[in-house]
Image 1 (tube, rainbow, N blue to C red):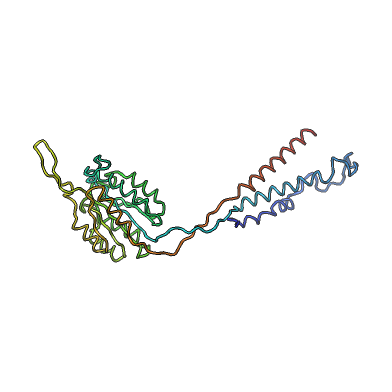
Image 2: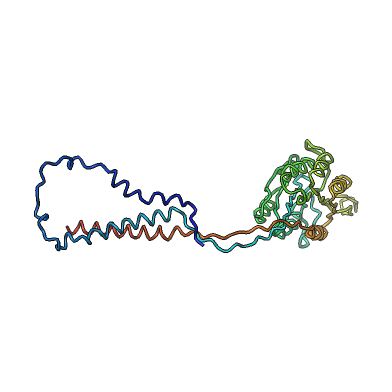
Length: 330
């Protein structure tokens, strides 16, 4: 099926005739009292130089060029068959902690120690890629919370923005309450049954203007379900100059608060001590029950304006070349 994006352009088709009608008569031809005949006026009508067909074909060809230009300007396009989109109807927002503590290297990827943010990018990136049909957004937070990517079907862009994030970009401290508040603000207009926030942090709320529990209560009233993920390894023994000693990389992790946030909104709290455990968490999140929504259809379109435009330009070029050659040969 062919349709025109700008059909009103066809109203300009009679424009050449209007210009011809309204064109003023040259001053030298107004009120001429005497017409001086020339030899050409007395040539027989069969003469090749003035046969009617020799001039009329250029007239009609010029009109054809104009019609093709108008046709191209109307933006013809070919509509394909409707294609159903795989939409589950879930709006999923990721909130990722970028505070200074995320540089702790207590995770392993391919047996190499990496910081917590790198591990989060490694696993969360794959999780984002699997969210086919979901709208995914990204919030980055430290001392402040920032919307890095609004809800979108473009998962590749969301993953790219996550990969480009760096520790300390939003400050050195942690504003969990601000991140939840921003998520509520961005998801408030969506269907109440579809809202999901996955909050990843390795610390406690140490900054921001909104109390996390207060923000969580607002989220619960808005129908936002929050899944919290606590990042960081357990206490371990490490070698030092004074022998082996115990260190706890997750000493600042407020698991109680994260558990309360999840329970108040009907979500769950997960503990990610290593990359394998983090992968299991995302596999569990993958099994979230999707909400059925009215099916969306996409109709592919293919622009066709280049064909009439190309033909018009070729014909116009031929007319110009013919006129130049005719002028040259007298």
